[in-house]
Length: 75
Image (cartoon, rainbow, N blue to C red; front, side):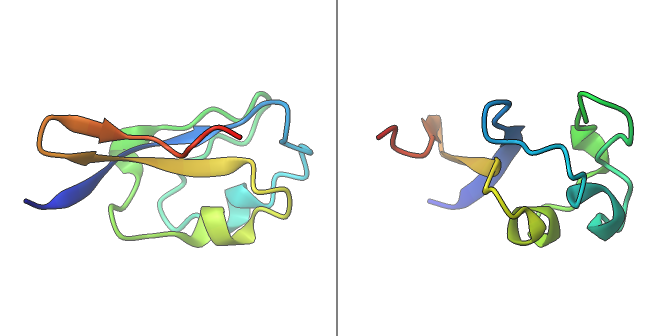
């Protein structure tokens, strides 16, 4: 069964609002005005540039395997 990225989430408490995610996005999926909302249809499935660029790790991906949604474990 294939695992696909379902969507991205920006954790508001972790975001430092440096907006590093905006210029690295090749499709402009991150909107450049606070609260830096995300336009999911514009996002490329295999792209991780915003996740890797975020210094505070405020962006994370949620995946789907079949009907099951796989979210990061909460610590």
